[in-house]
Image 1 (spheres, rainbow, N blue to C red):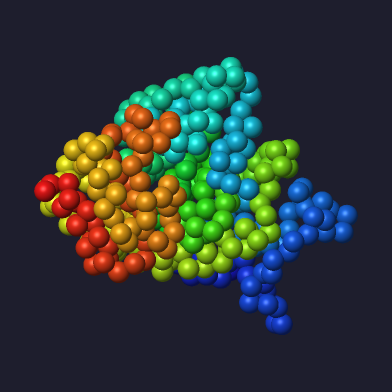
Image 2 (cartoon, helix red, strand yellow):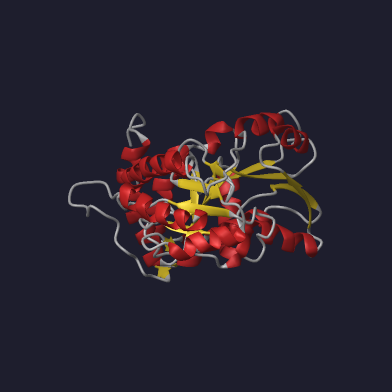
Length: 350
């Protein structure tokens, strides 16, 4: 593949069959065994195509898993008992839950750090065995200084640096180029893009780490389904246009949200399709959600449809500001989205 091609181009062409007479797309291979190889261990051509494509975008060696949370379990499998880890105070609920469970079982010591407290993360680089970064964070959309943390880790005993890149996508940032060791994605979200699959991806900076993650996948049985891998690869082909269009709509909505009387704060990192904004309290936020007609009140994100959720209402997220609403902007006409949002917000102020 031509190394000068843009990420958007590589998202379309990476992982395709090569050679005259080959199909334009890798077919679904629903095989439990390929000759003498058991697919749980050796993978399938469908997995391999998806892994090649994501690896090309992130600049590392990719491994597909059954879900995003399965990638967290695989990373935890790399750590010996008694390891210390640092995690953001605001991050994906499932990730925090996995670390909290390991802590309760006595496997790990967990330090929780505010995402934007770069000095604290730099300090943790000299103490922890693993630093788990998420940027932008879910749901508060804090941006973490990945290069600064990675530089600090490189000057110490080099803890593992893992970055959840789900919100930014490979088109928004490439953490391996910033010094991270492992990138994880919930491909259920923007990569798949159509709210019709569960799948996770890890991308490792070197083959040693990639091999250990694949071993963890095999031992844990966290292998992706053939259809899910094929759907994720098909979704990846349109990630460039989907993400660009959703990001343009998000920027327009951010501009208007910032001037609405019901909104006390808008959280937006300056790009991307994820927006968070705060209303005065939980009652106001719930009332606004109940009035929405076009925007879907749902827990997932990254699809073609726009979704909204009050995260503090969910188990495990009580520490999130009560009036915060997380908005995943989809591909509807942004003017229609604003009409729906504005009438719902107007109901709060009248």
